[in-house]
Image (cartoon, rainbow, N blue to C red; front, side, top):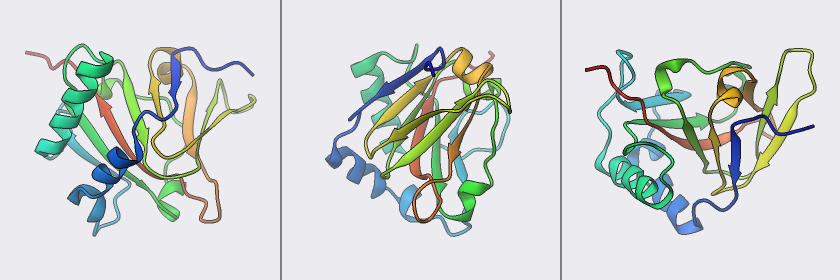
Length: 170
């Protein structure tokens, strides 16, 4: 099966050292209410916390190194796809709240993502390792359903750090 248009896989996007630095941040260490997503930045009116300095510094580094976004990312998501939380996030097509492109950095081993054109279609699967990333834009976000697929002994997708840029209306 062909890769969905607009999906770019970037193996070894982050070094082991970078992954460990991210995982030591308080947003990854502390999740007392076991939330699947925690939002930081500007999400078009949706409740979100102010990004921590490390998020902005890392977003600036990614912007300068890869030029993925038109400006430094202004949206950050900390995700815990652990155990039952991963089963709460179903097949979906993204909404426009998260900007044109979205960069997802995998912070745990054996994360499995799937893409399909419709519920009866064959699933395009990608297994990601710690430090791998994927960039979604165009059809892979707006036309193809996608989700983190249950995998491994805990049937979870692990942890991830997501960045995006959304131009705010003035």
